[in-house]
Length: 292
Image (cartoon, rainbow, N blue to C red; front, side, top):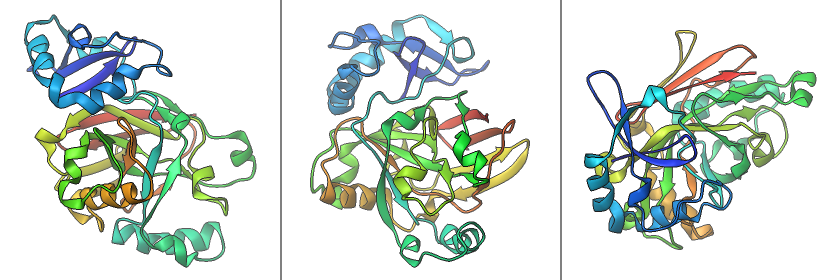
């Protein structure tokens, strides 16, 4: 199932049609009151937690409701107020290799510890949706520091939990979306460099795990003005999604609705004002953002 948040943070089920993608508003089928305020929308976290119980009602509502064209609605980021955004670092071998050159150029040295897989946190306030602007911070621009794009497969936590076994990790994941982990290249801490407002575009919607499994075998593509910047398959992940979930949950409790970036593929590079970035993930969808 494809789950979208649109307009006034309504819940929609998306389907592909001969004349483009469509969406049906299924908000009324939810067993909880709908709260349009994203900061207090507990219904969203309840949906992530209890999706298995409400799925059939959403399917029925999607079959009976009025069909809208996705092009006629405003898609929002497909998550609401996660308690945290967890991100994996150094999870593609080719990206680790390219970072030696990137760090030599931007830092004047290579930080060996940053070449090892691990996780870090990003601010939830950095999340924006499809069609948004990535705003380069004035102080970063004034300091002539590079800001890079990183296109990633992103998991959205369902039931969550602590110390989740790898073999059952996908039972705790709602589904996947596409995301960009926008990054300042500087000596600062990862969380600081990646947490500016607008630095976590997500979209266009979530595709649930009953369709995508564990997220392996998906093509990721990022283009800018028709130029391919990043192209990879998630088969190349060094640490699989189930292992990332298990590892992260051994450190912190994963709450329903939390967001998990799975790692940057090779091909990262600077972005500049006026550029338009289009990202797609096979079997999920695509989104476009601009740089300001």
